[in-house]
Image (cartoon, rainbow, N blue to C red; front, side, top):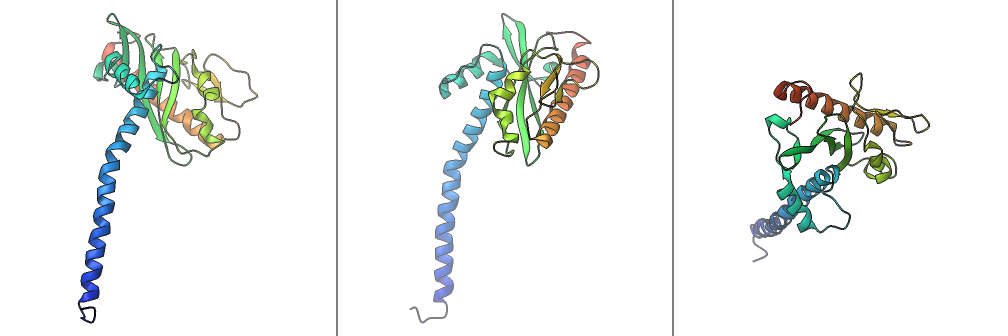
Length: 210
């Protein structure tokens, strides 16, 4: 049969179909898991910027339970931010932020207290910046700077300054050796805050909180 002219064609067709089926099947099996992990990473980021909802070492199932039970979904009234409430009173907002980093998109969440001025924290759930440099934005030494910073009402909402500079109430230190990542992240944060505060004011009235 191997001497037939059509045998190589049929053989290649069968083998291609076989291995293609394996690849497609593998993708379908792992695709759902990848999507679930991405969603969990987002939930973890939201919880970590909202007061009292995140602890290191908490199980995946517990994180998901807290997210579902304690975090209100975004709507037009909150400017598309997630919300933490207690007894009907807003405690803080979790605002998703995203934009182009130095190498790839940076996606994260920034927390803001109900006063619309005080930052509760920042977290990232997707980034591909340079390991050891731009990727330092995910480290606690960088992220912890944002807690209790005040959103400025003049100029930039938040400023990133050189590591040697003195800091004000609306300033944080940039990542050493990662000028481009720091500059792009500063733009992402300020663009997101400016847009959110504007939309929030239009929907709820200037200076109001829920």
